[in-house]
Length: 453
Image (tube, rainbow, N blue to C red; front, side):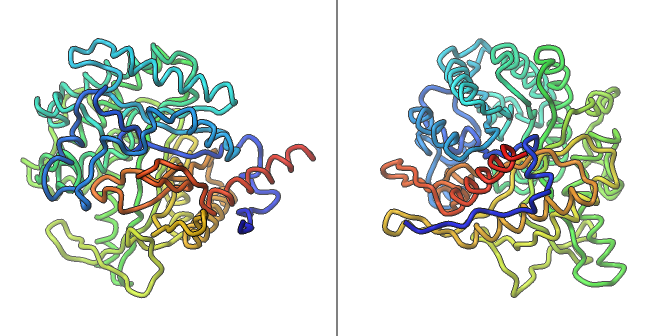
């Protein structure tokens, strides 16, 4: 068996403090399978549409987590993590008439109880993109009523799960739901309209604010917040035009979701949109959206580079001869540190959790082992990037590796592997990759340090 060197951090790093939370993360549609015991959702429909998923696959079986969850809990515990981030499938816990699907709800209750026995805290994401299809049939996130339906769903989950949840995230990456799903159409439900993308974004943020009120009322013991993804925008050159283009891109792709939460307004680039492309903001919406949060979840994978041009004043530039992941994303840990510092200086943020960070690699099983050198280097450099941000004064309180295991990677199907754990989709056998063992080793070192103090 190949020896794997643990990830390393300075001995006095805040990340090595026992109060810092280390975890792994998953999402319901990507791992659960067992589609016959839940409502159809927009990703089922998208997968059934020819040409939408790179390998023509779907999430009907995925990692068969519904049937293998006990094994998966043992797997999570074996890593030595403090916390597990999972998402609830809306259509697994609620029927179409909004009554509780007892079988689905009891699955999550049993899962959370098993994690609690092992002293693993739970972060619950209420929405990780799998909108029930019957809601999409009524307009989905283009319909304000969906925000209220989400608030009702959030209330029911909070009541049912009780004090089993350490922290709730209302939404995961509303950028992906709105922009990828409604504006450019590469994710479900596959619409292609700027006005629809901006409308969906507003209703998602409204749903977040409405759900926050329900969580405050029915889960007062739990932390409550949201998870946003950020791809920092860098100018292609030193020119003032490219610097302005990068700022415009940052506003459109990143701050569009953060600024309403923190400041109750959309960024200035909204003025560049045609009137019919701007979302309808009703009186009181921003008061709801700016509900005080206990934390902000930040997902980071890569940066983007822009130059002046395009309809809104910016266009993507691909940088050659730089290291990239199997998703063709540039590996840039320095941009991670700068992002955290910049956001913290521009906004009065609540405490931060890094709720996703990871890399896809073309993993291959050889002699019963999976060695993933690129992912090892990626995670090591990005853990150090978090350490450096904290040293610079950023209040980061936890880090979650994405993902616990290989899974259904949305429009890429099963072609892209992000897991610390390798999944053989034919046998569903789980195998710890070198990155899982390095993570395990880091957490064991931290445990030893804590015992010595």
